[in-house]
Image (cartoon, rainbow, N blue to C red):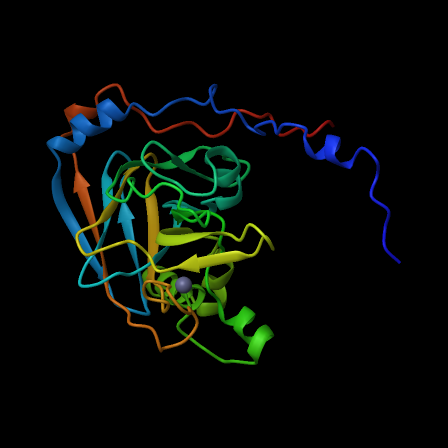
Length: 282
Ligand SMILES: [Zn+2]
């Protein structure tokens, strides 16, 4: 039985969209201040994330961290937590609602309720030229989740152990001395660094395509609060074909941390947690 189309169907479809969350009232990052601080910063730490594996790293508030493609095109899956509270973690869904499907310079990574404050601000993106391609694809998305062994098992009965979900679980467990069972619930939906993704126009399905990233490209962040990060070098490599097996060419990713001269950030302070009173109507 086919449903009859209402006579005003086209009129209903023709209604113009309204932006859900206009961002004009969001406190804007002072990119000029951050850039001035970055100019005098010195590198204090580096972590090389091996292919099909992940590593955790710490970034104090007011410091910068840069993720760089080295050796070959490679996608990275990024998790962030408040260094002193794993419950305050990156909230990709709300970040997407505020800034759109793909992030670049000036966009911020927001933390989960009840905190909802900027954890990090993107201060430099060498792929900002890419924009949105003719397929609707863009770079650095917050629309995917993270590749994981459960979906592979669901779809094909596989047992694959180097998806980003498992890599991040091992990295967090190793860094904090947790068991895998303790660490796993803290792994969350990611910022897909360097990944090129979108939704197909006809079926609305999530797609990926070969990342435009090349060695030397980087994405750099300013840490708004003390951060614990973890980055997985996805088993999909550049994610041109598949992402839950050992068949793709994979490369390491470099994470570097930079400390500014403290006087360069005088007057700056980490953002306060969200001001909602949490009484929820009672
Ligand atoms: Zn992955």
